Image (cartoon, rainbow over all chains, first blue to last red):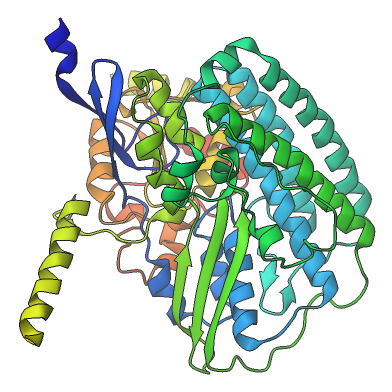
Length: 396
Length: 138
């Protein structure tokens, strides 16, 4: 039997799997019950945003990047308009900044609640799933009230925001926040005190601080491993430097810490929104932009999953000539390779989900032949080496 | 025999969710249908884990070149007759991605589609209405 456990077997997960919302493909290499390696195969969600973006005008670009991801559908447009504004060298009016902050934090609340629910579902606690998603509904209702859509709020535009928060909305937002705060407190206590949940989550899928830095993880994944980074504090934009709030950092690095960071961040988000509603200045919500000069600009913002980075290069026309996007899950998913290694296969699904992966954000390239992936990572490396060799030959 | 099959399909449709290069939003809204506010399970609509158990496919997203063979395979595995319900503007007509090099959709180019529910994303109420309409046409 000892030989039997030494045999390496491959457990495929996906692309269409009841566990996953999105199509993606994992190969778990297992020895007996222990996971020894992981191969990640993406590309099922690649739609070519960076290619379509230069065909659109600056006013249309936020609509496109909004559709990168349905959950962080404010972070991408916000980063894109920050990049455009950086390029044009303008600052939006203060009221627009506050509204952007409010919508961004409301999105973080609904995204974290969504993750907590899914994590509960993964460990067999469907009650947690139903609870979390029920309280998330109140946030979606607030979105529908302010912006007219439950998701894809279309709030940002270069130079300001499209939707104003009307005075009659403010008490309703506050009421929804009070409700969500109370319910999340109850949920947090229930989740963090449950002995079974603790036993399932503690010590599982550990990503140490060194590994977190080596794999360049961002967002709650990094903060749960003791890396103190948050773009909202490190590179203040919108109204984040005008309201009091804290960055939650834990040091354990396991799935429990990741869950705790997200649950505690919900309260910080509520604090930020309350602060913004208190200080909400009067004035215009957008400004006129006559031209975007040639040049380049970057926009960084903290999505619920980590740092989103957008780069826009302009040639003075009304369209960008290059739009580069880096989504947080790109780094976080890669760190799964170390987090899942050495764990039990029963914990693999949870560990893979613990970084809150968003594959539709991540998909940046795909190479095919007859519908099958043509190049793996090794093949790409080989191609790259061959190209270097060729250039060396030419330059000799 | 055909009548019997249709009768079986109408009463309690089990649905399987196919996401092909979607932005996650329609998918989350489909899951939203199962959670307490909308709770479609009271109508007998259950999300199942395998296309072989499904009466209806809820399809979302533009299909890309890598996911197309998988989508066709899922459709092959679904017992016929089955309903295909395209959810979201992407699934209906490719939406903002019509110029993308990687989008080979929409779905009705590749598999028969019985109901289109446009919206980005459609509201859960619209999805329920679409499923009910598709069922009542059987």
